[in-house]
Image 1: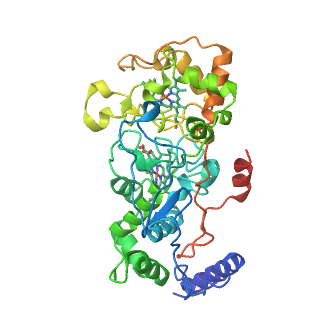
Image 2: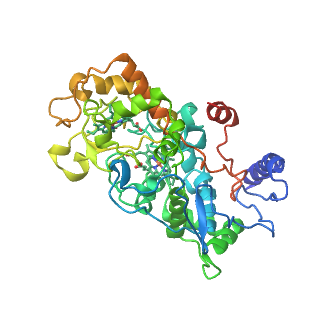
Image 3: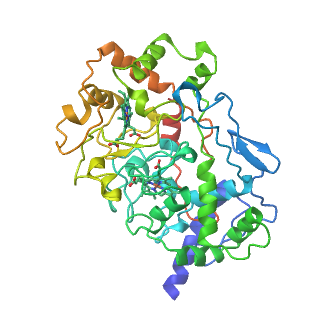
Length: 411
Ligand code: HEC
Ligand code: HEC
């Protein structure tokens, strides 16, 4: 009891000093990490995040440049118009960055989907439970078998995870939250912890109305999913070019785009604009680094889908190395060379894979390869990057890495 008290006291002291630097009025120290008293004038944001505009009470996507998804070989469907409550999005942002949701209070979603790494983690394979730090410097802990995808435009994804085992963000979130290898939490842990925090009580009341007396795991997941849906990226130079600003892309980039959509490279068959994914599964024959990954086959049992994965988006792709489900390819040069050599066919993939017929040896010239890489850079747009909260209601440390963030965002 006594040592508990001492720990609590020092922890609060450290917390107090740390937090008073950033948001002095919020913190009131107590015997545990977990009580941060909300200031009476705290309000969740009722302003729509960047990239969204207000329509009545709700936020809808502000498609500045994209006129239709049907254009440019798109998905042949009307533009999705999800309606989100700005306060729920803001609540989701706090939860996304708060390690309180993990069993050991060490790991938040943001540790593996961090703004500094374009909502991924810059790692070949992510490190889950028991690890320390985040991003490429994260160490110890359980190494997961796959790499963390970035979360840009997940609102449009019909199949989530590399093997598509979840079909909604709500289903998806239970994966990392409750997996013992990742956040090692449970519905009970989340509910008992959050209901004990006056700050979260206040936030949930603001987001969901006064009637919501009890914080439930379902509401937590709802808020995080709203936040994730808000992460849209549609104002790249490519989008400006598509909308008619012909100066938005250089001639080299344009050459790259022509290679991208040519019958030789065929990239656009699977990565069509504007999403740069066709949302389906394909086998290209990427190698695994350790144990063999059967991809979609392990979900459906269909041998035809052995080693197939959901086609990933290419938006912000220059910022999310290393690449592929296994993180096996370090750079975009390596990716293009891999395709140029015939994908798995030219790289010793197992011959029981049915590699897609669009993936075959291409003989692209050095110039074409270079231009293709330049073109991929036109898909960058991080203008709607969410702000990292300066504090989270649990008072636990938030994953902030200023140096690397500034280093990368200045590129
Ligand atoms: C330990 C690192 C780690 C943590 C923590 C983590 N994720 Fe992930 N996330 C991953 C990895 C790795 C994958 C890919 C797993 C797979 O496909 O099998 C992934 C996949 C996803 C996807 C699917 C994206 C897509 O394009 O298919 C979403 C959405 C997601 N995570 C959201 C979250 C949320 C929300 C949280 C917090 C509740 C979270 N993640 C916590 C590593 C992590
Ligand atoms: C037959 C469909 C198909 C074609 C054609 C195709 N891709 Fe892919 N692409 C995929 C799939 C599936 C993956 C994920 C594979 C994996 O993780 O093992 C992928 C992954 C990628 C990645 C890594 C994405 C990430 O987040 O890690 C890049 C970059 C990429 N493709 C670019 C291209 C380029 C450039 C071309 C044309 C030269 C191309 N692709 C052609 C299906 C395709």
